[in-house]
Image (tube, rainbow, N blue to C red; front, side, top):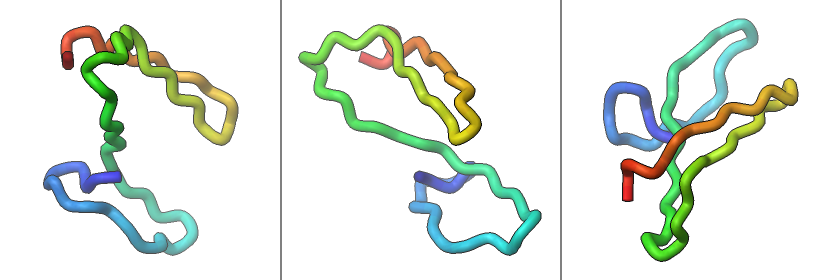
Length: 55
């Protein structure tokens, strides 16, 4: 997890009710040939991201 506006790792605990913005990153081997990244949150919502352009 990275901070939303800087390439610094985000860590720590937030007080109850507080919100923050972060970015997730994954290193994917160039030979993998992935087209879509799926991310499912704790509530069961699934998000799909097109990753074809990041090769």
